Amino acid sequence: MGAAQCAAGVRSDFSGNWRKDKGMRVQFSVDKVPFYKHTEEFRLDKTVSMSRRDKKSGKQHAVLRTVPEGVQVQIKLDPPFSGSIMETYSCPQEGVLKVESITEANGQKETCIQVYRRQ
Image (tube, rainbow, N blue to C red; front, side, top):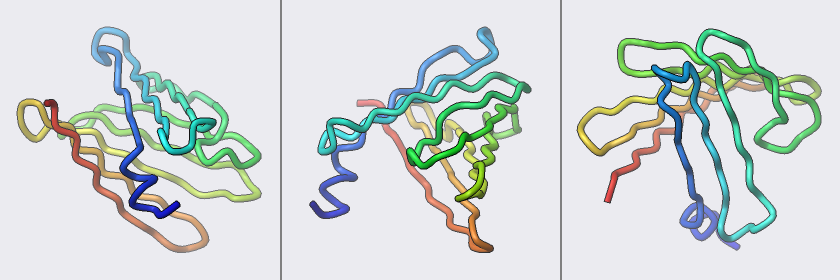
């Protein structure tokens, strides 16, 4: 299966009123890989630990913070495959969610920008 086919099957669900609930829930599932479903719940200004989204051994530890453009999640990944992920969630216009992810591991950094539009 090609990467484009897999990416076309990705579904994300962002829920929770983070201002009221002081948290945010993100759920990932891949239609083309039915056994992969991952849910993350973040709490405002509190570190939470959970299984890693890449399903490798160890945990990930995340904290949700407010930033001028929206909310930001800082994730630290346990060894043996340690690294970090910083995701910034913003709404640049009505009905649009932008997620900018910066992943760092092994001295390298990659940035991914995803844009979701309400239909």
